Image (cartoon, rainbow, N blue to C red):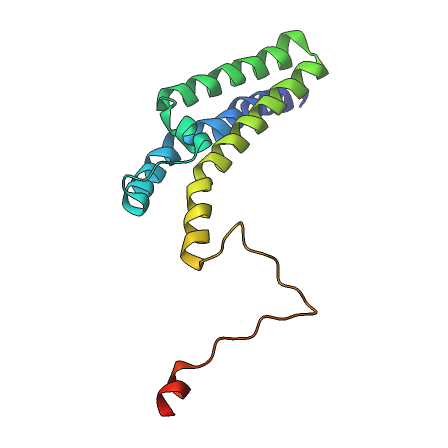
Length: 140
């Protein structure tokens, strides 16, 4: 029973890096197509540019290295500090990928909605009046 749990644990620690980091190998090409259609030749944010310019095989290499580190930690080294470090690297890398990929979409939504990051917040005591209805102006 104990051996089965140990094998299951090894399978989990090997697959987690591929789920978190290695999945970028499949998602990044789709996001590149979306950005080409959506933005055309507009420049991408810095973080997005860095995430996209890493070769796709680079994300797989990072995943393999994290998987090897996890297996070594589970079988030979057995250090809780190394486990925390591996999990932290995995989470930070995957968070960087996700944030980097969604930054242009956030910017596009802001532009489409007409929101401005420099706009003043709405004051509850002094509400902004709605613009007059142009249809009523034509009736006069």
